[in-house]
Length: 192
Ligand code: SF4
Image (cartoon, rainbow, N blue to C red; front, top):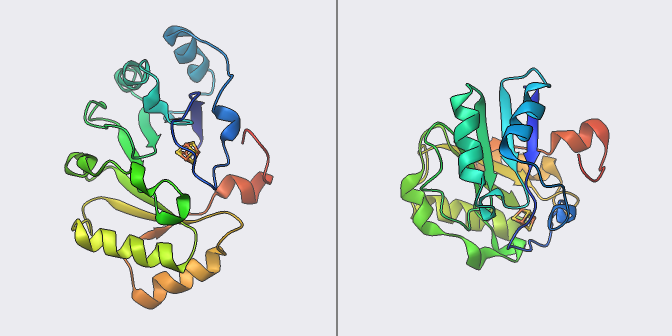
């Protein structure tokens, strides 16, 4: 769906595959109303708040709330390292589970799991076969099958999407294969 992305600056993690390192610093300071006015110019009801790690900014929760109040379909992309409990219940939270291959597996905040709702998504970026097996084991361990939508995404230029698809098919996993569609449509361009 046509979606506006609001990218917030800053992230306390350093995943080895990160493709938004340009969002670690810099950016432009906007007040809330200016952001909302800008979003309205795109004439779509779908808004994704992302980063960096958007929850690292204290204004993020209020931004999400205001977007919901205005009737947008709001999603939040978050690293899974910060507390999601206070996020507005109307928001679809896309929560990463950092695999060993990311280099940030120790940052997973497992206390988030009880807060997941059916309209949220858990996302695993898979770097290799070991990550794939690890992800399956985590889904078993925390009994996450069917709890919310499960996304397996191949780490860009580290694992071919077709290979991951073959593994998913062989195991008949009830997960959605997610590729970074924007890179296939417009190329690997910073800021896309
Ligand atoms: S959590 Fe996301 S933005 Fe932060 S380092 Fe990892 S991939 Fe990059």
